[in-house]
Image (cartoon, rainbow, N blue to C red; front, side):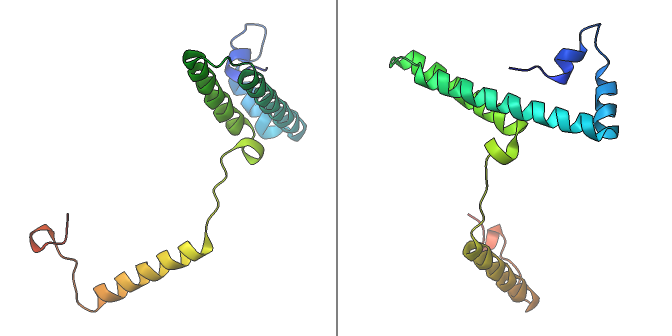
Length: 125
């Protein structure tokens, strides 16, 4: 499946991890190879997810274990290749406009001399 830089560099026959990170900063070809390796690792994790999910027996303990494995593999794949497997956040423009209008109204009200009410004045729950 692939190992982390820390795991690889812990072997005495391998370079120190600081050297690997230096190569990533300085060498575009090495950086591209590293990125492709991480993408391949993410694809492998996703394949492992499918194997785990497809092979689970319908028993509560086994289903819960498979669910936990699924979540862990999915999270890791999303960190390795966020554009493909990461959580995607979509912003609703209508909601953004409403929030901006609400904020603008609150600022305008505060500028007109009205101050927010405190706890003793019934302003807080």
